[in-house]
Amino acid sequence: MAVKSYSVILSKKINEFNKVINVDSDKSISIRAFLIGSICQGISKISNVLLSEDVFSTINCLRRLNCKIIKTNKNQYKIFGGGLGSYYAKKNTLLDLGNSGTGLRLLSSIISTTPNIEVSLTGDSSLKKRDMSKLITLLNEFGAETYPKNKINLPLKLRSSNFPVGIKYIAGNSAQLKSAAILAALNSFGTTTIEEKFKTRDHTENLLSKNSKCISFRNKKNIIKVFGKKTLNSINVKVPSDPSSAAFFAAICILKKKSQLKIKNVCVNQKRFGFYSILKKCGAKIKVINKTKVNNEYVGDIIVKSGKIKYLKTNPTHYLTATDEYPLMFVIAALTNGTSKFLGIGELANKESNRIIEMKKILRQVGVKCKSTKNSMTIYGKSNLVNKKRFLKINSLSDHRIAMACTVLALCSGIKIIINGFETVNTSSPSFLKIIKVLGGKYEIKKRT
Image (cartoon, rainbow, N blue to C red):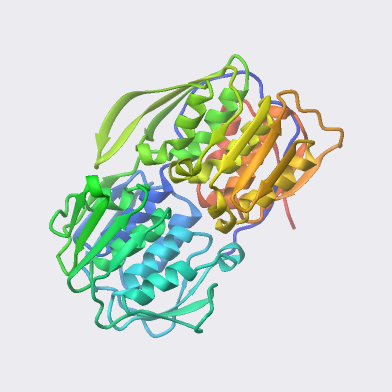
């Protein structure tokens, strides 16, 4: 069912606040939990699931692959896993992943080593534009094939390998491709060795950690070994809140004077915590309390207080732990005095949109000087941003992070901004506007006909 399009209009600065909030559950962990649960033996239980479009797309595709999934409560599910190689589908069954690059990459990797599967992969207009050449190369290494040959964008047909064998894989800065290699390796013969050049987010490894017979780690050498054809025991996962979704509310608090915010039960995995670490180094008042370990993930409450910060500077290693928050950091830089520089961000060009180019266009329209290359962005920020235009219209481009970042820009600058296609935010944070309202933000929703 198509999601109805709507616009959000913001025209007033948010007032100071002191609030305690819960944000939406983590999307990365939710999707991975369903995928891994589907190839475990027995019933896996997932609670506090993110009820977003990307997660629903993953669930729907798993059901089309003969995996039984039932909802037992508002955000609780049971997955009746049939074990490795248990997927089944009629030839050319259509799998629509919507906007979910995570779902596409990880599900196709599992399919690639499940014998006798041939499916058609598609997604929304944004996902269809994304370059999948690195994923295709990885699937080919395991013996799977995609059609048409030499095509690197969806829609594609995927034919699985009937005799997948473990490979040696050098992982770059994409946690999704690393996870794809791990998941494809689980049903391959022999051992797959994955060497990480850089330590990227490790939710897949954490979810598999209790199945120690199938995966091992050598942290000093950044080596992951996956031992194929080992039965996976069912998992029981409680999904924490998403640090990327929380970052947008933290940013509003940082930029708004005399404000304080407590965000509860957030995943504070260090490989997802780059945004907060970067802002702390720039003077932001951020701390984590009540830190515990749940399902091999660290969870805690984040306390944020407003205060003066200095310009932002990031290097290529920051990208690994703050991938999703760069559009937001561009907005923070625009509203902070000084020259902020972001280096090593070339992969932003292959997100839901080219986030470097699109954010530069937006910031220039509100009077912020900025320049970019294929791998960097420089922003000349000013805390008292005054826009002479009556209002600014922005198209979300089916990019939830751009829509959310522009919401922060409007609330913290007072510039009237109309964001078209705001429904894209539902792919990751369906409670986003409700929480903005809790903080005191004013907006108007206009349904498009």
